Length: 96
Length: 416
Image (cartoon, rainbow over the protein chains, first blue to last red):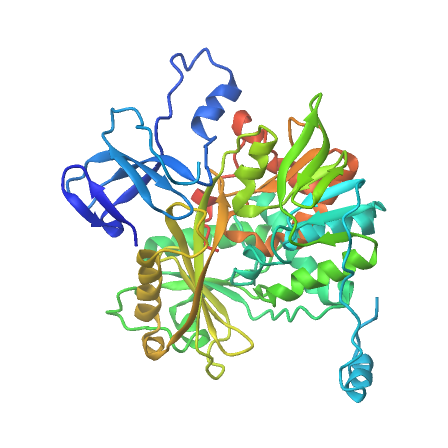
């Protein structure tokens, strides 16, 4: 069981949350002009690291807000929680 | 290689079982190979076997960072079936199921394949309608499949909660009678033994740390036991696909998640089929040893931790006890997790890559075990000819940019 610090509600259990996958994916600015490969990369390719992962979570059964998390995908340890529009902070530890 | 037979068993019994030969050779890593396969699970071992058997490429190494079949091959629920929706999938998985049916004889190894039937349950009128469409799709492709009503299901699975007030009220289902379960270690060992006897070197405790690539082509592999030169390299590493492909500078459309399973204490035979429910995400079978083997959906976040999280365990067991109230008295004996590589369309990737001589078999997601024979056969063909085997042409890495997804997750409600 992962315990997650919701920035709005505080520390809660994993079962209250939904993981939204990799964060900071940038949509190409001109979809009509980019190649199929770049569009497919945006749609489908993922970092999927063994170690530190920057990902989105939603407090589904709480405040329903989205936020970002840096989590180690091997130990599941959470090293940072930050707001949706913030850029990822530097963290120490984990496997990266 | 000693041929296994009833007579041989008797002969070894008379000598107190002290003279059984090694099942496969303990090989030393050589500096040069014609082909190297990363991953000593079912897929990697089958690939090496078919390279040697079908294509005469016998100077082959299989590199395994742990022990044979110690990853997902030994962590799954050992179900084989071919009841997919799209022709691309059905063709492939039906071929694989046929290989399972003859594997015991083909490899002279008892894989204990029991075709007790795979039954999928529907819990609503609407799901039953989708099942009829799905079953028809399977039947028109020449694969056995039978739609069953509520009464028939009740007879086939007497322990199922058939109360009209059940949390999951059964409306019916469909059965693929040729589906079933086998002994997963035996499949890995059978391919290892057959490949080894054809000259394949199986190297355990050998982790790949980097790939040597120059001018866009594979030159070799760096491992914890030294560097190997080769011009044909394949990876069949399941949950770690993104990590190994990353060594070649290739980013995959894959997310790794944990899929867990568990077994109960052994009990007398009471459960004849593999019973799954795509909607509630729980499936149950009974092993030859009497344990109930229980599986469900994957954990809901990316993970490389081979253990499984409690909320998913709870939701799977909740479904099991709602559906089979009698099982609530059983003790769980073990629970474990394997890391599965999930693609956006829940279909595999068996493909050449932008790097010449580098081939990938990945994205098997929650259903790789049943694909072992056909996965190995098609990857070996693709490596030997540098051209996709016809069965895996639809499953190329390029399909994502071309928009040719084989969207089994949406259409077939893929269970595992």
